[in-house]
Length: 209
Image (cartoon, rainbow, N blue to C red; front, side):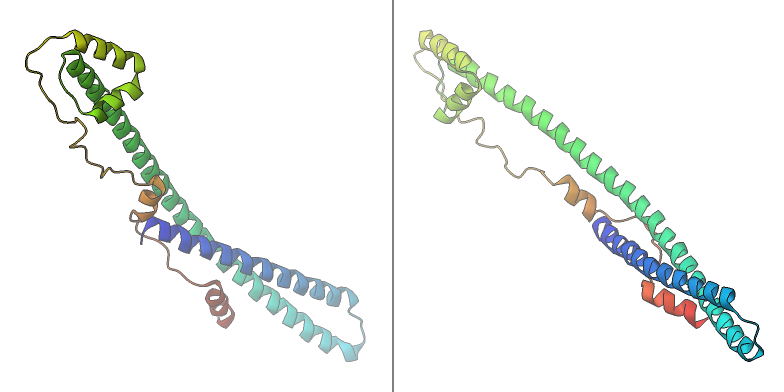
């Protein structure tokens, strides 16, 4: 399972469990109130004692089942949270690594670009012929440097001027510009993820015991 998928799957489970726990907590509170009402309103007439006892036992049993179910949901939800925390740490690590690599690559490309700019200026100063696109890059980088190179080159008297191809002709455009978020999400998630059990199925299993 990829990190992005794991974050989605286990995040959905945590939200589902939270919803079920909220509903069960309300049911448990309601049962406790009924149980308290019966206990406080219990009369001592013999004819009602058995009814009160049966109702009390029924609510006590229901409350116990609801509490066991809530405990089971809590335990499973905590498993999901622990695993999701580990996956999130992975996510951040991959994100940071990809971002750092791109910054490193950008710095390297910047140095290479500067080297090409300086070489174009040197060629122009020698009076050589360079492509118009290379001249444009030098001019965009520095108008003063461009004009200086052109002036010096104009004074260079050579019978045969060397003609150069563009320094950018062989530049490959297929750069590694992966989105750090996509890189992190598509990496393999740490193994050992807890079994996915729908909240409804867990509730049903506890109730059946």
